[in-house]
Image (cartoon, rainbow, N blue to C red):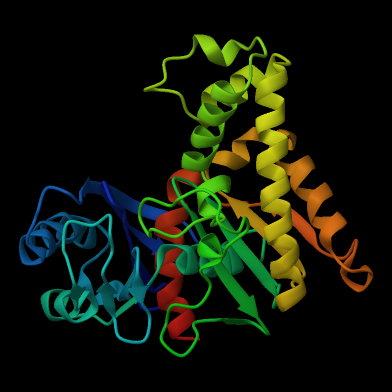
Length: 322
C-alpha cells in the first residue's frame, strides 16, 4: 500500500460512540474500531484516547506515510472553521476547535463537517449517488439529518451550516422538539424518536385494538411498530402512513427548492421498506407542482450501515484533494 494507493482515516463522532477506520480510494474499510464518546468530559483526553486507538491501525496499514488525511463527521461540525459548535448531544460544550486539535496531535490535514454532509459525500463517492451532481441525502435515525448536493457541490451556506432540513417546520405550532424548543419540525415526526412519539399519541387518542398496546412503553420504538405493521396491525400501518405523509410533504418542498435527480434515504427507518417508502413517494408526488412530478427518484442508500459513517468521513479527504 505505497504511494500508489493512498489511504484516508474516517472518524464519525456520535453522541454515544465514535467509529473510526482506515479506508482506501475504492471505499474498502481496511481497519476499523470504536470507542466511547461520552467517557471523556475533556476534549484533550478524548483526542488522546482516539490517537492511541488509531496509531495501532495506522501501523497495521503501513505507517503514517500511507495516510493522506483525516475526515471527521460530527454533530454541528463546521466545514469552514473546523469547529464543533454547541452540539447538544456531545459532552463538550461551546465551540471546540476539533480540526486544529486533531491536526496538531496527528500531524495530518483534518477536514470536518456535520455527519449528514459526510454521509452525502460518501454516497456520492461510493454509493447510490455515484455519478450524480444533484441529490439530497436524508438520514433517518434518532434525528433527521440532510446533505444537499447541487451542481456537484455540497451546499454549506455562508456559515457552514446549510442543509438542516430536519429542523424545517412541517406542522406550524406542532409537536415540541425537546432539543431546540421549536414546534413542528420534520425531525419531531420523521425520525425514530418521532415515530415513537406518534405511536404514544395514537395509542392515547384511540380505542382501536392493537398489538402495540401490549408493548412496554419504555422500550417501544420504530422496530416494534414495524413488527406490528408486518402483521397487519391497523394502528401500526396508520403510523407509517402518517410518518410517510409528513416526510413526503417535506421532500416535496426540498425538491421544489433544489430540483435534485434523486433523494437518498439512509438510516434505521429505511429498514421498514415500502411501509415508509410507499406513503413517502405518494405524498411527495401529490405535493409537487406538475413540472417536478415523476422526475425525482427516492432511493435507499447503497452503503453498508456499519461502514457508512466511516466511509462518509473518509470521503471528505478525497473530496478535499479532488
